[in-house]
Structure formats: C-alpha cells, structure tokens
Image 1 (cartoon, each protein chain N blue to C red):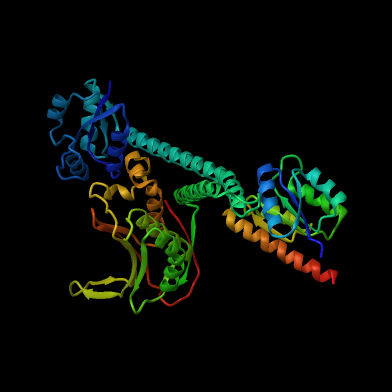
Image 2: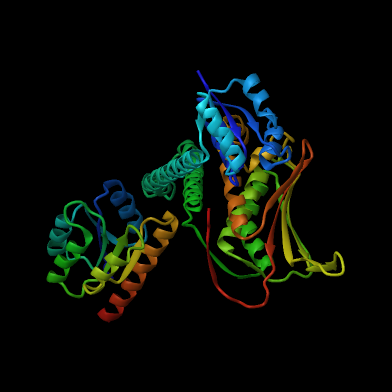
Length: 367
Length: 131
C-alpha cells in the first residue's frame, strides 16, 4: 500500500524534492499545495499533472493524504503545520523534510558512484583477456601457426571483427565511467581542422568503399585553428562516421562537412551587445535509412543504454553516441541531429575557434 | 648473427604465450618464465640479452625480481610493465636501473608497439657494443 503524501509550500530545492518523492516507489505524490499559484512548485506540478491547489483544506479532504510534508520556511505555513499535527495528522516539518531530501540525494550519489566504480573495474578486467584473445587470433592470421585454410581464415576474420567491436565497447564503457567519476581529462591544444578530419577519415575510406559507400570531405576554403583535444575529437568523428556507414545502404554516401562561423556581434539594444563566439561546425551527413522522430530524443540519453529496443535496433551504437555527446560537452559544445526516414541523417557538433594563444590546457570532466 | 634472446617474465600464462610468440615473429629468440623464480633460473641457465618483466606478480613481485636480477648482473637491460602510471613503483625501481616502463593497461596495440620499439632500441645498442 503506497503512502500518500501532500507537499505544503516550496523550498528553493523544490524540484529536487518532488523528483525524489516521485522516484520512491512506495510513495504517491498526491498533491502540492501552495498559496502562490505560480510558484515553481505549482508550475512543476501542473506540468506533471500532479494535483496543485492553494486550498489546503479542500486538498486534505479530497486527496486524504497519509502524510503532509512541509517544504517551506514561511511562518504562516509552519503554524498551519503545527495545527495539523495537533489535530492528529501525520506531519513532517520543513527541517525534517530537508533532512530527508539531503539523505536521499546523498544516497543516490553513493549508489551512482558504486555503479560507476563497478562498471569501471569490470571494463578494466575485461581488457586483458580481450587483448590476449585479439593477439591469439591475429597471430594465426599472421601465419604464426602455419598456413590457414580459406574457410578457417573466414571464421577467424569474423572472430577478429567481433573482438574489435568488444574492444571498442569496453573502451567506451571505461571512458564513460571516467567522465562520470570526473577523472577523464582533455589535453586541449590548437588543431588544424582539415588535417584532423583528413587523418581520421583516411583509414575509414577503403573499408567503406569495399561496402559500396563513399566518404567525402567538404571543407570551407578558410578554416581557422580550433581549440580541442585532437585524439578525443578524432574519436567522436570516427564514431559518427562509423555509425553513418552502418546505417547507410550500398551505393550511399557519407560526407563530413566543416564550416566556419565567424564571431558575430550585434546590438540588442542601446546597452547590450550580443556576441556569438567564433566556432567551427563539423557535420557528418549520410544518405542512410534515417532515424524516426520518436527515437531521436533517446539517442543521446545515457539511459538509452538500458533501452533494449533502441540498442538492438542500433546494434549497440547507443553507447558510442552518449560518449560523443559527453566528449563534445567537455569541449564546451553540443551535438545535434537532423534526420528523415529514408533520406538520411546529419549529426553536427561545434568546436571553439582558437584565440591565437597556443596554450596547452588540461580539462577535467565535472559532474 | 645470432638472434637476440629475450626473456619474458609474466605470471599470466596466456599473455605469456601470445606475447612470446609475437616477439618471436619480430625475429628474436624468446624464453618464457611464468614466475620470478623461474625467471631468475632462466637468467642463470640461458643467458638472455634482454628481460621483459611484469610488475604485478603473486609470489615475487616485479621489484623483488629486479633486485635479484641486479644481484646477478648490474647491466642486464630490463623493460618493465606497469599496471598503472604508478610513480611509487617507478621510484622504487629507478635506482635499480630500468630501461623503459610500459603501461600494460593502455590499448593493446600501443603496448605492443612500445614493447617492439623498446626491444629494438636495446638490441641496436647491444649490437653496437659487440662491434
């Protein structure tokens, strides 16, 4: 039997409180009551279709809560709470509510850290046997065990391909764990976009061609230096291109486009001047099957990992996209996607232009 | 010219086997030892030119093995695997003399390339001395 709770008033951390209550399975958030109809809490309640009202008496009558939680420091509300407590209603005063909220948040942080530590340790442990597996297969393919028959070679190639996939998955898991734990650091330097993109897509061209897909690189005539960690951006780009190739049928094309958006400064009014900073936009455009509107919001969602239907559809590509988003975020940018079913998709991310000082910066993820 | 002899000391048997075979394909003679003790015996009986030593081993860890090696031969080149970029372990072994440190935890391809070049550098040096 669920415990029905009504929240009276509003904290600064109101949304946190409501989120926490809603996530506890044994509680039903039966309503929110506040004098100010347009307070944050009331807006939040209406958005989530939780009963919200300024009339406490009516709410108590209609919703019959088991517990009333005070979430306000207003003296008037505190008096109301005291009165209700004297009348025998189960009341949690604001101080206790705040304490419970802090405890719940600490607990959540703890659990997340445990989860991440576990993923990190497990991925690390997986590395060694996968590396040895890879080497054993590679040695046979290299002839260290004598000549292999064509059919043997075929199956070994299949084995090698899937070991490579496993290696990528494990490395992605490790990277994501590091980002979550705040231990992943970027080495930001000045980079030549043309060179960076060229180096990244060059090794991908031949295998793509073997599958009937052409990779092109379209680049603005003038491109400034950018500030980024070249290895990480290469990682992001390689993933996006690999994804595009995966979801593009034979005869299709994957184009990497780099555009420069110079700084624009314009006056909003007499006093303010809006400034958009200098940035370079990199897009990966494909002529593939496209992504449905319903699936797009979940594409970059970390919890999309746990969504079996999406992962199966994408063959595990979900993890890579989350990592791409996090890495681009650490560079101060964002990743966006435009897609039409049957026509193709375009993934775009931006990088800040270098301000001329060639400095090496170390950046850590902060969550 | 006789092939350079490389002694590989690592307690992970599978890693020992595949890494050993891989080093052979680079044109070296390989001696495999799955423990510090086996390694020390092999040094005395087979006279390797280069040692590759794992840091993390159950009975005798890398540092202890290195101490033993230095008692036998102060100049034998030793390449050491490290589990993490562990400055503590590097400090302990620096005094004993290590040619290069190779982190085992990073990408396997990188590890391989690093081992290859580490061996090549030492090999060149040794052959120059012979002349």
